Amino acid sequence: MKRLLVMFLVVQLLACSQSDKPVSDVEYLAWMENEENGFFQQKTIENITFSLFRQTSTYRTLKSTDEQLGEQFVLRISPKERNAQNVLEQHATSTEEYFSLLQYFNTAFRTQIELVDLENSTALPIAYMNIPNYRTANYLEFVFAFNQLPLESEFKIVINDNVFDSGPVVFRFKNTTPPYLIANAK
Image (tube, rainbow, N blue to C red; front, side, top):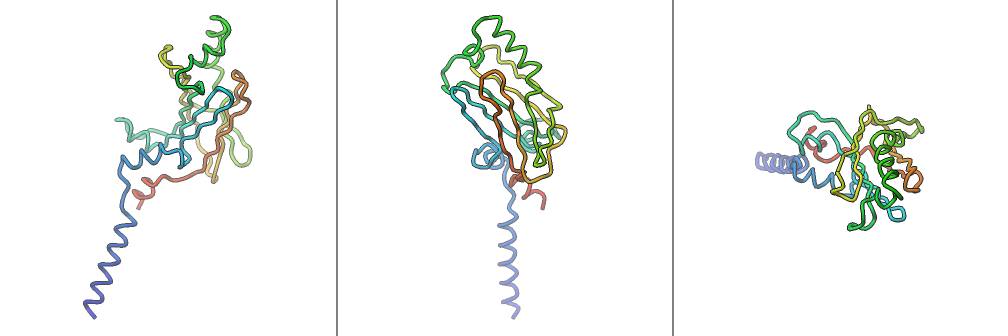
């Protein structure tokens, strides 16, 4: 009987250790960057690609030396073709228009980004930054964050594009808890 009890306990310990095995930092980062998990999404409309990456606070902390970073989104607007001309230079018909578009993306574009919950309530980003690339890259890149993400099962980020004639570009996110957080919460 003792032998049976010991074997039962060993089996239970092995089963528990397998299910509670924490995910490594490298595995977590790879999981977050995998499109299939829904944190990174792309939409191509005609010759422009909109990419949006939802970066959790854990993801940002693992990628940085800073502690306690909040959740943010990284939006990249790029030409469909990798080796194409700068996305703004493609669109602008003159130097004046190019600088006008640059000014728009530095300031007013923030008001064209919305968080929409299941009840269609909207919020604008509380933090917004156009990452300058000084014409060394052919894309535009933005980082933004909201005061608080909805607690519902899913939400949308809507980019109301007024420049590239793409209309509203909608990204749907599920409030998924990444495996790292599940494993380390136990």
